[in-house]
Image 1 (cartoon, helix red, strand yellow):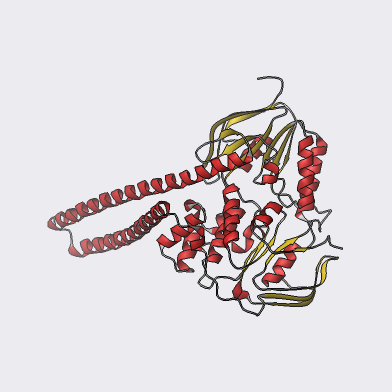
Image 2 (tube, rainbow, N blue to C red; image 1 turned 60 degrees about the vertical axis):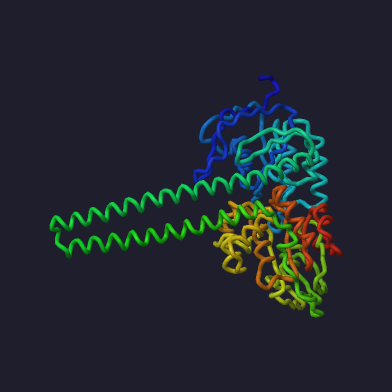
Length: 474
């Protein structure tokens, strides 16, 4: 250990509240001048690790030895009571500026570009280029990650160090994603086989019990008591067997569907809906609309008619992008003007997919609402590069990025698919695999599209035709 050491983690072990292991016996050292990007899939434990390094959380085992000052800017920024109308981007930039001004020995930033507009991201990149002390950043933003050569990859199979450019890292992570899906399906198949074996063992034991009842009858147990005991036991056991068999049947079907999807990977385009011929009637129309946030007028006398146009909505933080999208989706009301929409032709995903916090899983939704069988559901999920394991979890339990991707799959598989998709900051919280998958889906999508985003690279990649730039609110 040298005098330049800022922080050392020894044998760090941490579990989730549900007991799932995030880290086991992790050792790491950060030195003065180190610039490390912490990357990995959503839910892998990156934010938790950063909180442990910052001293906000305590590991279940191991210790953190700190040799300097630390400053953490977390992913979630609490509202400022002194600035009730400040946008999330304005609050984040304020928090980042405070951290830079404190001049800590080690700066820890969790998704610092989240909510920042284009000028905010450029400001942040400039500040980080000037930074000479220790730095660890969690990010999925390529604009930021191109500033790094050292990466710490957090994954279910373990953590590792990666040196190289951003593009080389993305290629490696995509290979790991495909391998992880194969391992998951193999493990699921082993578990199903073991459950089948245990079910057979239970059935043999039940047959032995039945033989014992015959012997009990021979010993003269009163028939009315014997029948009562037997009736209750058989009824209870029959219910258990039915539940067990249903679960095993569903698990076997899901494994078979997932294995077929791995063996014959469908092209993404084949999973996207065929839309009806365009109608001359607009899907969403605004006439002379005014919207306000508190005392601020966000926009006034705005008229807009959309059918299957592909529209980018841009503007600085607080300019009214989310408000405009909610009006187009029919979930908000203007202060003045008229809004006409055909809700049956619109698919809307709000920021962080908060309008898709459902108890159903993606698989359940595709089966119940879209009427797909398990094979078709598995093929669709794999074509979208969505993890099989997450496809079985309730949408409400997913991270915002995962939930957005699941919601988009649900919308595209509706029996009557939308003709106009409205997406508010869809790349927020998305990991690399999710970002690439979303780009691919929206490039292939033949319908209309309205997207609000600060990510210029993303906007260019998804082939938007026109742009509506909102100005700073008055």
